[in-house]
Amino acid sequence: MHIIMFFLFAGFCLAGAINLLVQSHPINSALSLIVVMTSLAVLYLMLGSEFLAAAQVIVYAGAIMVLFTFVVMLLNAGKEARTRGSHAAWVVGFPAVVAILSVLATVILTAQGLGTASVSHGITSTAELGTVLFTELLLPFEVTSVLILIAILGAVALARPSDGEPDTHEERTAGK
Amino acid sequence: MNTFLSQEVPLSWYLILSAVLFVLGIIGFLFKRNIITTFMSIELMLNAVNLSFVTFAQQWHTVKGQIFVFFVMVVAAAEAAVGLAIIIAIFRARSTLAVDRIDLMRL
Image (cartoon, rainbow over all chains, first blue to last red):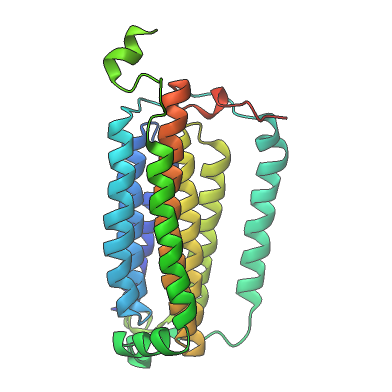
């Protein structure tokens, strides 16, 4: 049962990731990324982390991807131009990608002592996670909240139109 | 066939899946020409790394790996907000999302 679930959702994951690369319209890429993230949530659940599975759906597939689709629609992004891209990407990037994948695969496949995934090994409960988070790791947790505050301020400051710049669509297209 | 279906999944398969997803993210980052899709590829790489964190958390029966994933998620959310604000600012300045035309800093 477990192995069927793994193949099903790993397949969804890979199909979504490949579809992200193949699609030329950003909205299609965003939707396939949602498929990837939701299937990853199921894989997290099979690895026994229930809290992260929920957080993956809520934070990633929910909040972050809504932000992405919102921006794609706001900017009315059309099809991307099919260019050959930068020269460096082909000369350095492609061999580097192959090298990274082969090194990772070799290390993982030769690694000894890796166990098997099973829910019977115990699900990490949210209470257990929260206990460690709010006792041992309280300082990083609080620092993260400051980070989020700064990110909110930064996003507002960056996205706001500066003075003297046309900020409506009509003014912008009229200026062209 | 029945023994195959009832056996447990080795953790190395999860790690291989994570590596493949990461590499697909790199390919997208290098070869996609739309700045939003490039940004999505970065999110894909973050997710791939998260999967390997959760896998190792399961391997060593520790909570720390999962908490690290939690922090990665928080940072990714902050990064998405700021990154998309930067994309909006770029679009406002140049009226394009093609990375080939946003090349003031190219070599």
